[in-house]
Length: 207
Image (cartoon, rainbow, N blue to C red):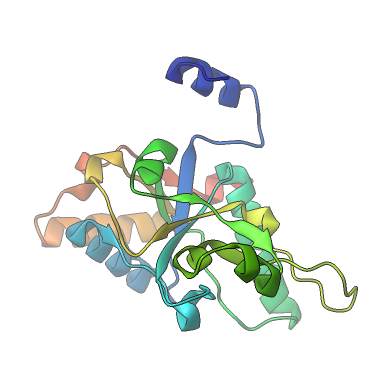
């Protein structure tokens, strides 16, 4: 059964756990570094795909990763990651709550699809090597070694992802990073903050 786009959007509007946007988060160490990275991505109008070493991508192809979740859930994911690091259970910075939200349709049209959650060895048996970039390891068999990233509801695009600035909603952790980004745009005479679809301060969603 299919239905028109307005019906599709209306269906999503009745669900607090779903979104018509996909979120790609950045990873940088300082406020200025986050602002500079986001400015660079907008200047290039491209997200660069991660490799096996950078982002646990299976196979030889790179891929750009997105979360298919409402912004409130994306905030909860990143907040939990921060608590893991502060508790000493992890020292890895996987991502920060700053980045880009893009329409799900745009990502789909660029070849983006939901990942396949399964044991990597099992998924390799039924997928051709050209599709291994979609595999995310999933294994609940050992209670002492749970591997489960399904909370991210991940989508991936094979290779790099090119976009239009007008499709992007910018996501900032807090006001100070947003202001640093504005200053960077003004300094370089690139008014991206006027061209994007919107800007959201993620901190205000949780606090």
